Length: 337
Image 1: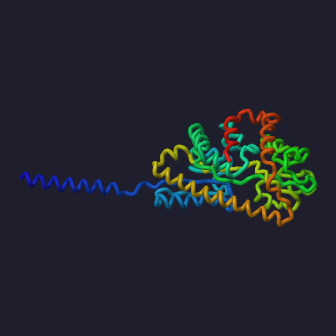
Image 2 (image 1 turned 60 degrees about the vertical axis):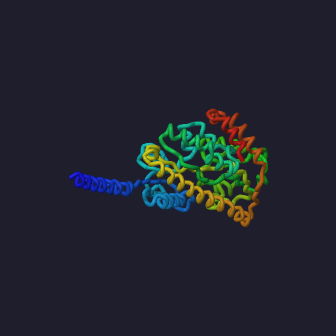
Image 3 (image 1 turned 90 degrees about the vertical axis):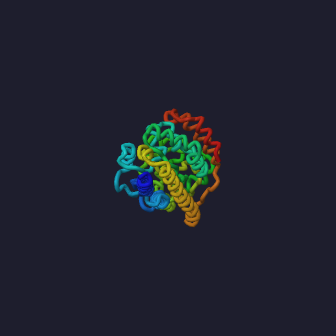
């Protein structure tokens, strides 16, 4: 009798063990992330969304899937900034400029010469400083930037009568077109120029007629808008090295397992590698293009002099904008090369 009972119990244990083992092999629940952007298809950071999607789906074996929407298919730029905080979209691109309205000290990252090179920017945001900033945003805003992608660098573009500019003092009296906002006007002053507000659609004719003496934009914009047809100089000041941050809703992030978070971070890093290389390659090739069009490209202006001039300008004539800056952090960033 005892042997019979023991045999029954052994069979039961084996069956239960099989059941538990079978439960462990069940496929985990699929996680879906909705990634929205207003950027257009040919933008490097738009293409990076697909790189992110493919990489996270590959790493997770389909456990994490991503739905990509670009060109404002879901939201306007302002609306998506609100949507991610409300949790109605999982991922978007944010930036220092967008978060400065909530954390004012971040405004300095959109100012002239806070960054003077791609390396300085990416080492800042994709290093210990950036990690601390991203954690502060996550804890106070309910959204978590994952990394910083390179968006492009703004350069000076001047008409012939201005001459070859290498120092900020040579910008005195130069009518530099800027968008009509306090931040952009302050940037024009920080470059040593006479900032002249003008709509983007008017810039080409403004340069052609002399209503303005120059403008600033990343090199791809200079090409696409054909500003090279009505200007003579491009000065590689690197005065605004811009970034954009793939960002996830914090509640969504916390709902992911540690493994899923690691997959997402790895995919974001893959997207950054693609985006940064694409933008850098495009900018490098455009220098040759502008030379072919007859422009003089000043590749090594006195950036240190421009940076010092800009810092003083923000602390004096534009002090209302700089009052919230973290100057200790600003000085720390200037040591990064």
